[in-house]
Length: 330
Image 1 (cartoon, rainbow, N blue to C red):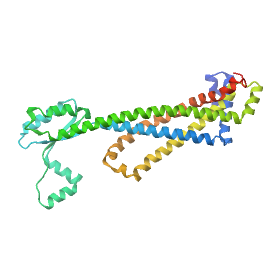
Image 2 (image 1 turned 90 degrees about the vertical axis):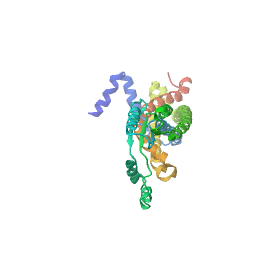
Image 3 (image 1 turned 120 degrees about the horizontal axis):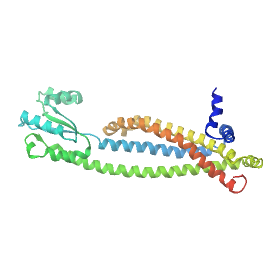
Image 4 (image 1 turned 120 degrees about the vertical axis):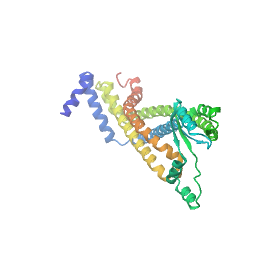
């Protein structure tokens, strides 16, 4: 049944003569890949180019993740001043929640902060209880901004005269400094992404040249076979398509192996490198993995679909000198 479908499908899109040429050429190209071993040298070059491409792509994904994290919600804690009344506290909290730049804001009592420290910093709580020290925490307002870029606007709001006896704006200066550092880092990331994109374009051109050279080498090896086909009046597609099929298989294999190697490195590197054990790495790891879950399938699909196109162009460029020399009838 499947063989019948395979035989019928080409007729649905192209003429009967071309469908026969296509099916025979695909079968012939596939056989050549597994029959001959001369392509190993060229495969090494393809693998090297693809490995660089995969590394650049996952690096771009990492840069995009860092950019998203820096631009995402920013958490701020403001201390409530002791002299603030309950009415002033609730008014401040309500006004903050009404701001469009705020994701959410909650009131945290000093008792809640102490219990949170019991979980997050048990050594501190043990020390305080050992020496019967009072609760060092104060009532706070926990705030999440929608974006880091909103820090200045929120700072202007908090420093209004009406709130000077309600909250302590001391931590806002730290947020402003962090915003400046984040903007510098975002600028560096944007420059790196542009540079990586340019390198990817250059690598794609190099990949095309490697495929073209691969086909030229294969044509030289099978020059006698190509010449005989020309003598019997073979269609140029009969010569070009098998080379394109060979190149497609090699591109798919190089892309698959290089991607598998990069994924292995991504999983192994964090366990062996201390640089991935810091707070920043832990903050970025989860969103990076989430981003890769959507990024990798798209990348794989593009590579699968682009390989036959690159192979076809490379095969045509590789065989074209033979066409121009009159060895094949164009």
